[in-house]
Image 1 (spheres, rainbow, N blue to C red):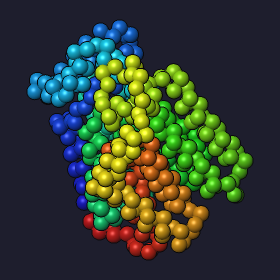
Image 2 (image 1 turned 180 degrees about the horizontal axis):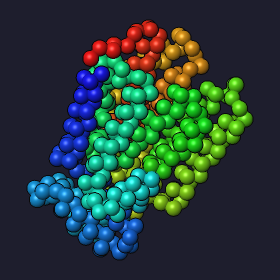
Image 3 (image 1 turned 135 degrees about the vertical axis):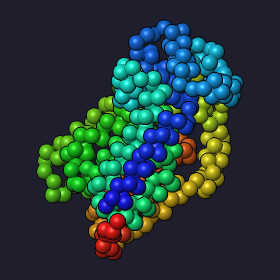
Image 4 (image 1 turned 120 degrees about the vertical axis):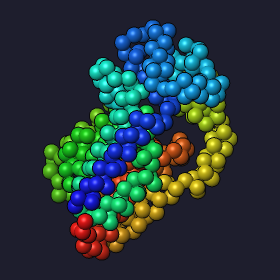
Length: 371
């Protein structure tokens, strides 16, 4: 048992020190910081000035200059106040994530530092949920394999980033825990919060609720069914309100901005993405996907889980969760073909955890309790 504690403690220490001393600074973190500054001051000049002052305090002179000069688009964010301010509406829609970053800022912590620390906390919390729920920590072999899988799927990468995807990972693991524990009331109450962390996850919440309803529709109480409909209504309402209040760029603009050309003034963009543009992007990303190890790892584990659970108990939480994860990743890629693993680390790790559970349960392999 001591050996397992030492291994996990070492992983935690490495993640924290990596986040503190080797953070992966990106422009998303700059925009999130701009968002929380704008909560207190709506003057674009002040928001811009404070944001880059905080960035300068957090980075070395070399890192600061590197961020500034990587591209004409990035240089414009440093020098053009209007361009910078027009980037913020899209990021403001992640209100629950921004609330946690804002709390750290109000506590006196530089948001760039707190954003990285918060990512580590979220990743560790999600991993702990999976380790404890499935008793993975009781087996030295499974513990080591699990931690290696967490690195393959991108948990280490995400812990160094100032992104909401680490918080999404924690919530996906929490929903997974509720599903595996047959705590569907808590699952239904918690699922809509994912939309407040990242509105694009409305699709994931919708799919999960549909699969969950199919799984629990027989033998469940009327109160649980009410929770289901309340959850679906809340998720839909949150999504609509966020789209109305934080209109963002719109899918057309964001697609163009992400895959075709970075826009200095996205709110003023009047162009369109043609079907040919979409097919070209989808083709290029599909080819790149064949070399994406986290995705291929996820595809393999999901296929094995679905195959084994269909051979045993068809109406099982393993089948329900694995199917929802697989369908979400597929649809999300078709709609918005970004292959960055940070978007899907929750689904990737949940799938691998299901694989460990399925092998242990179906094969009845006893846990290795040696130190």
